[in-house]
Image (cartoon, rainbow over all chains, first blue to last red; front, side, top):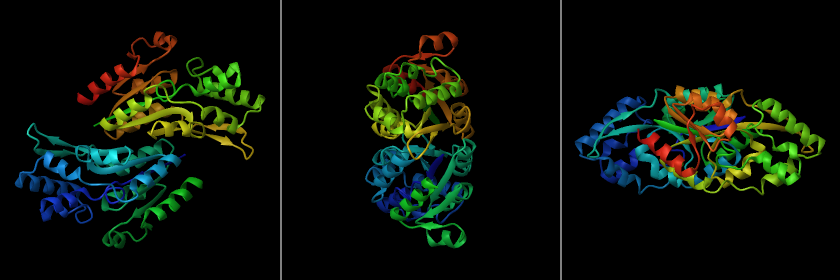
Length: 201
Length: 201
């Protein structure tokens, strides 16, 4: 039997931190896993920037609540869910992403969470487990699933390589250059073709 | 982080085989895992009954397409999905259950599939893996999830016992008598209380 796993930001949702940067005017928050591949370095930097700028969870939620899924994201997810099973594997945090998951029809999401104090200050982040995306693919394989995986960033490489079929979706050119053997899909129409072929074979 | 796994038939959907029995008038198809705990014995019997009565996949689908989820099932699932993550672990078959999953808003489902020939005859069933429910809970624990599990039947015992918190939902009295140490929940209101407590602790 088949199952699909996919990244969230850059695939179905806009990059949350880039949008927070745009709305707050804090240029440094634009960095993502596309530029800094070490997630701990990236997140520690983001949280210290929030603290310096006295931004708490409510400020961030306010920004996030104004965002919408990418054009066609809900439709392609509904299409996939009517044909197969999909689990979203994201290094985002449940406290940030919930309003956007509602807009996507609540597909199942494996992610992480934040430590927030009673004043709403974000004091830390809790990775549920290291390499959660790769491990999730391994776990699904152990349950006798044939797994297809796609994403756009450095933190998707592991799951893409671990899956039976894996490819990039709209990756930045630096990632493609570094992993030339991984196929690239550029839009939802191409994605439908790939998924259709995977489910039929 | 927390995740919930749950059985499908008897929890969110009516028992599919019982309804097929009622609509076709074939009394023997009323047997479920509630009465026969060995799933292979049960399924082999069901398929041979279908063959004897010349019922193919389209006949079964016709019956299933007339069924509705249990009263309040969609609402409780939506409530759970807005608060946490849920994966349905069912020993049903994807070919049967798809129209009913649509009526539930397509929560993620781990199940099995059938071997169907070009004339629509159901020639066999393929268990994706033995003890899939218990193994799925183990896999989720290996991904550092705290797992809550509930179901109504013999084939749910393993996952209920493997999970950090497990209980019966509307079980038949024979199952309760055999496993007196497993807590029992009788309706969706009680289920909400249990899930609320699990997510808050």
